[in-house]
Length: 409
Image (cartoon, rainbow, N blue to C red):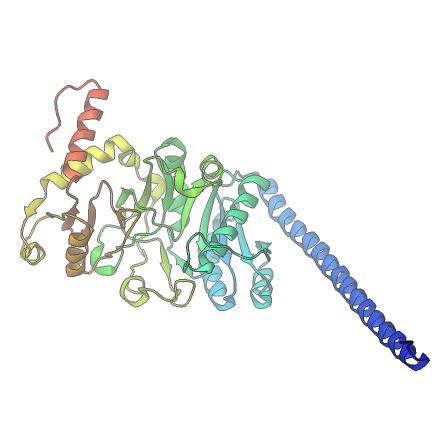
């Protein structure tokens, strides 16, 4: 059946309208793309200028940096301000040794504005619009996004800017007065001892009632995080896949924290904040770290001394061992049989119960150590194989040094 001229005109008008609409959309998208490209170019020029200024300052001062310090930020401008103000309070006098960066994940305008308001800080921005795919159902996407941001920022600092070391902070932390002195002294140890993967400023059991000595440092098989430093060679090794390159290396952690985490609201949704994070003691003692001899933290020396300390502690047994510890006036050790048993004992004292990857928080060779009621007394929670591990390794080190006598611990 033939269409009438009127029908054809209606079809042509409709087709023309659709064509015009599509063309307008295409033009609008092209204009949007041009604006976005211009913004990217402008942002790139701005970032390059800021980075150039920071690098030029280092060159002018003719000082080799100890480490770049990067604050990882996302969408909390008020938190970022509190963190930066805490850092600048102590960083200004050592700025050439510890150049400061803020790395923002995403496009939050208030965070960007706040970051760019600091002339002494280099701003970096991570933009990643690709959808996040978790490895297992139910996992929080936020943690994957944070991991991608960390990788990008560390690649920028280690590979693009060629820093030898980087200290990573988050946007909900305050630092101790001796934070930079601590990391400067620890940098030498980190460079010279390849059995150390990273140095941290954090102790998970650093609550006021569990610490005493601001000079005390420990080795740990558990990664403490929350303010930590690593070297470029370690990052090059770690970067492809983090979980497969631990290789029996340890971490250095302080007894008294050099960072304080005030982030009640964040990706962990305030988990454990009031019980574990809020009571953390931030160091307020002035320690001249560059005058301290940290050689006791080398693997062989630390293991021998730590093994002797654990062995010399008074052993307590039974389900009421924690109660008995309250009535003792000396260091004590309490053995746990498995994770469930550890959690029961830890709960009685109030320390962290959580394990990750089969390791209790802060543990070294399965041993978790903390102070009793802010005193000199130490409580050692000892794993079922801890003493045998320490004896075997002490014997091994003794033989390596030509001493055939078994060190009795």
